[in-house]
Image (tube, rainbow, N blue to C red):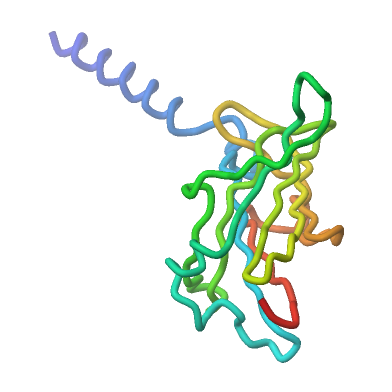
Length: 167
């Protein structure tokens, strides 16, 4: 009887640990949860998002994904759901930030997300990566054509700061 209980306990623990530890975590890779956090500062280093209420920013910022139309082969702008981005105060950087889940539809290994700001300016977030299971792996991230994040020298946290004259 004790052997049966011990065997059930060992098998249960084995399955629990195999579910908790993914192969990407064992290899020390970036975890397959692809959110990107962006803080915006001016030339003097002032936080451009700090003076705004997050719910107000959520109303005036828009996120779009570029997706390829299967019929025409053309890329179309598709509005992202409101749950695909948010604003928050980042404790590590001591700045307000935009947290966005980039487009998961990769074409030739890259996806494009458009960020429309308070003045209707469109910024481009390009991600080189791939989908793995229910998540995505980012290898490189460009903001308006400038490489801002890479897997190799950076920790899994995808956080970077963009300098703008204003929002």
